[in-house]
Length: 181
Image 1: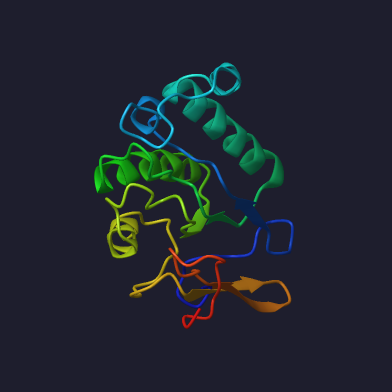
Image 2 (image 1 turned 120 degrees about the vertical axis):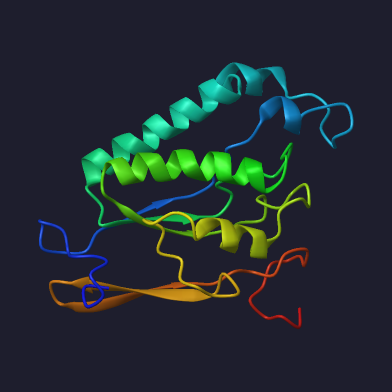
């Protein structure tokens, strides 16, 4: 990526990756309603998590604190970042990813993404929709590909490192990289 002017190793002389997973940004009232599989959020859950905005703000503050203290060269978002329960479709995905992108861009940090099993929970956002949506974020390193199986090349002080991303087929339990399973 150095060759393409996308990334340079950090001031600490090595390449540093911060992984964030299972952030589950979601519209809490939309996720827990009479027509859903879980019509009511448990009271203990509500007390710990709070409402949608409180939960999102606390999660973003945690991510920002880690970005500030760890000084990563890249943040890797590995699944269940946006929870599809209660989703209004790609607009909901954009809303949450824009907030994450704004935070990371404010720290000049590039990022990569791979979905988990909850991004498409309501069936309103396909993996293709997500790939297309991610192309609007200049700091997102997901290349122009047709699936979430990809590689990002990262320079370090000691040579190049490739970060490999593999998407497990959805709807097939147990999850497997073997498409025949």
